[in-house]
Length: 83
Image (tube, rainbow, N blue to C red):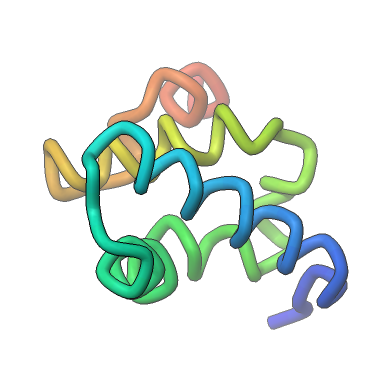
C-alpha cells in the first residue's frame, strides 16, 4: 500500500476531526479516535483509492456514511465512482 503524504494526511485529519467535533459535539479525543480508526481513514491513507482528490467536506461525508450505514462505500461520493 502506498500512503499519501504526511502533510496531506495531517490536513485531512485536522479538518475532518474538527467537522466531527462541530457536528456531533464530541470531545476532541473521541472524535479523533472515531475518525482515525475508521475504514474511511484507511481508505484515505491508501493512494490506490485516490481520495486526496476529494475535499475534506467530502471525506467527512464518506466518514459520516460509514458511521450511519457501517460502510463508507455507501457515500454518494464513492457510489458514483463505482458506476
